[in-house]
Length: 362
Image (cartoon, rainbow, N blue to C red; front, side):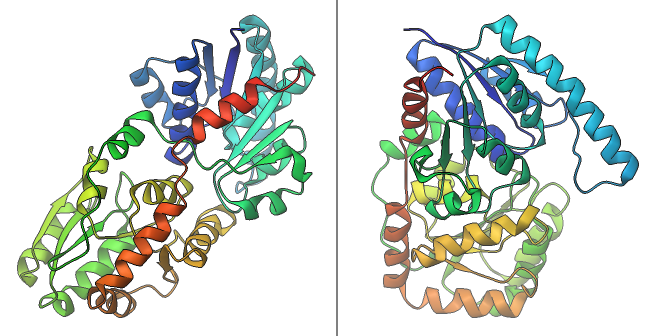
């Protein structure tokens, strides 16, 4: 039976990319899918590029704002909920999947009034506020980490740990790739901090370069537009072999090239590291909501796939102390990479869609 699906949420890449992966899995089934999101998030650019139909709801954040901002945010959510209700009825939706973020709340609330079966995807170890609300209304809750289920406070029989959905192009890039090379000098270090880079990581790397001049490494560093020239100049002055770019569009190739990553710990990033079987030094973004990146990094560290560095005390000393011993023990890098690979869930999107398709109507 052909189903009509709505995927709601967005804002950051950690929400939009899993949403796109789910959309691809739905489209592969031959079903129809509509996205509901914000006009201020990445979905405004990425959804049209992927050829998906989408509707903006105009909701705004409520938390983290002043009294007037919160009042305006609540009013916008109420108005957006009415519009989401109309869109669900117009589209004759059979299923709704929330991928989280403030942009998801109007559709989550509208699903209750419209009696459309709701599922929730939460990719982070610590769920956000919108996810904690949606979990109590959802028939199925899909998580990237088993520990997330406890933090959501829902019945275990409603939770599935299928992993974080990743785009088909990324999964295909690793599915047919050659086996990862054994770590050996010169070691390949991949440094990145999201599409805009990470100033904290950039600064620590530049300060540590004098200590890395004699280390057997080659570096690929995605520094972001604002820092690219400064970072490139620092590498040139130090003598460390490096390629520095503002943005890298072909991350699968970089993941395959690397022996070790130095990066943040968003839900999407840690899922990609697992898919690539790539060990990492993780520096959680210190201002992430509910400190969820630290929780993500902790889960990878417990699994033996990564080392977590305290972002509030992260500097050149901390970086050198973590990196240099790993370069002296390639067998440890290999062990960490194998542990990362065991966390991989390349079929997450298909499993989630299949499970949702089997949900009974309200």
